[in-house]
Image (tube, rainbow, N blue to C red; front, side):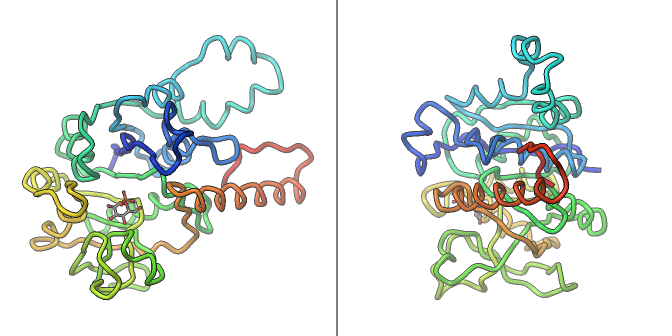
Length: 290
Ligand code: G1P
């Protein structure tokens, strides 16, 4: 059973400056819900209810968001607007939240290692809130699929999807051999290679499950690409001695860390919700995502 999930949220969000100067990029809303809420909901829906945010300076708005706002509760009580808070209340009522500071931003590998005191010696998930993933089961289903794979194989699992050659240099890229149509055993992984050096075009997207030995590996991982401790390099080490599986994500993934991806996600959910309410319902509530 995996109960803990790490959310690295210490990054500066420079691609969204100046909007992110005094506001965490994870609080940017796609429709009326901030990116981080979609990510936490995905974790809850896969039964990882212990939420661990690896945070940094200027990220207090995230803590406040998942906490009670008494004034608002009093103001909305008994009004129709109250139901707007229902999806968030479900998250708050079912999850616990821990926050740990990543004092220096030394990369994704360093962020994950920062959470070790909270996670301890158990398997755990990692969700990158920038990557908004939607498949035929809805917006919050990817981790759920990965947990099922973990239950069968008891090893680290990464979500991957094929990307065009022109995008390869932006991702961790894996190669491996197929176990079934939807999963493969990885035999190599490299962070942000040039297209001509890449082992394939299967790119890691921001969903991971790890066995806890990854922490010891991360502790001994030297800085890599961009002068940062790369999670990819630790995975590359882990797969020398054990199985690591890639789950071929079959859906749409929006890179909400970029303006293009963020706008595409907004348009997608807006259209989808409009259609849904035109089809079945009289009132229009942005909150539903599945
Ligand atoms: C990180 C990882 C990379 C992965 C990507 C997915 O890169 O280092 O391996 O493919 O997330 O979004 P970043 O986007 O932080 O540069």
